[in-house]
Picture 1 (cartoon, rainbow over the protein chains, first blue to last red):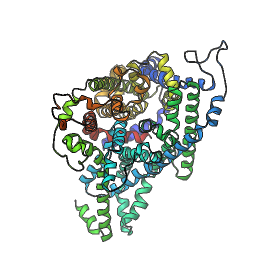
Picture 2: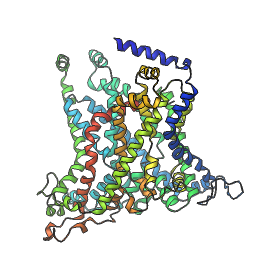
Picture 3: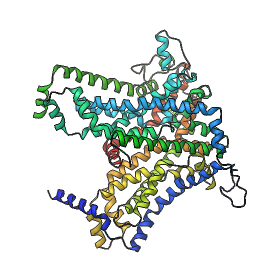
Picture 4: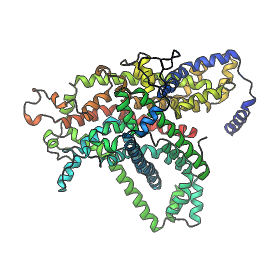
Length: 321
Length: 302
């Protein structure tokens, strides 16, 4: 009882936060000094690279200052963006990015929800816990090891081809097959992250008021109807939140995993913007061009988050800001 | 208990089938998730002949641990292991320090410019300079090809900082007020009053950064050209993905007096996968205890 009163009171105090008098200047300095290490690091490693974006509009020479006022900086405007959009690789990169992300959005997004919904219906609590624990184990395994396992299983002497041989099917070098890449990538990605992604849904489900189910049962709703009319609407905010982020990451892809799984034979279907920037611009030393491509991607990503957020606010009454 | 039986008595026949379906489905999911890891494990401990003929599927055939003993002689692996430990320990400690120091002042009511500081934290979560400007920065700072190129950019984590802040702002304000009355400075309040009761959130942050750092490789790929400084994941990448390191060379003549005792590269790879994933599996029980809680604290903030 006492605790409850206390929380109510602190809440009241928080609401009046605006009226609270400011800390003394001495205290302000003390606090800012405490914050300094974290904020300085963030400034250096997050904000200075943002300033570095200016080279996207220049013909940058490594070693030269990014902005010089003696006229040595060669500004080229949007040249690099135009070059990228009109380059021969552009359609391929966009197509691959959209295909791989589309597949990931389709399966990587829906499977955790379906898994969580079904796991939530399991009444054997011990079994439920074991299944959940097992489901997020792959999340802890490093991308390098996961990629290594996939490549080894798909090897001509690997597990998959051994099983195919036993079933009388022909042996295939899957990791050299451009057609197989989207499938390999999607399966690997979903395997690695579905359990982890379902944690948020499961925790949202565990906070649903049981009385709702009781009431629905009284009204004669069966289990599927209860799932449809109670569980799903209750986790809708969580779904929308994750959907907005997923859409915002549309052009990002899991570059880590692709870099490990692809090879020149599968560039046709595997090469995405992230891997292209790494290969062509970082290794190839085309810094200005790579920065322009990176900027192009993050601006589009940000626009997508913005649109998704707007749509979500309208349609589902949920928004990030 | 009584409630349970009451519910059960209401269960209809169709509901029973639904239950069975759910249990079976989850069993299938479990199997699909665990089998690849299990397969790697049984392959690593089976007898070399069985592994070479690819006849291991459900249970280990034969049993040996020599494949692991051979790995112990791999000096490259040990060096990489050592590097990973250096990177993981230092970045975890730094993340703890920066998150705690950065989070605390934001929870002091009456702080001037709080809105500015919070915005300062939020912007990089949505927008960044990208790969090339970061690479140029590391170069310009003279960190390229040094251990600092790995440690410093991972010395903070905004998401963790916000997690700690959320936790701190849940602590009763009276704690701080009364310590202020007694004349304690903020640093002292933070370390002597706040931290001792924040073990749970500190555990979450540590586990996040340990797992994250142990498994990371991309920064090393970009910033560390020298093999001597590269972490374990980079070595694993050369072994498992690029296949530029052939582990079967580790078979020495003394152990392999008979040809059938020679381990194939595949079996050694699988042993290495198990051996290098073990430390992360050991964090699993801690994860169980704190992690899920952390995910939820984070999710509240969105």
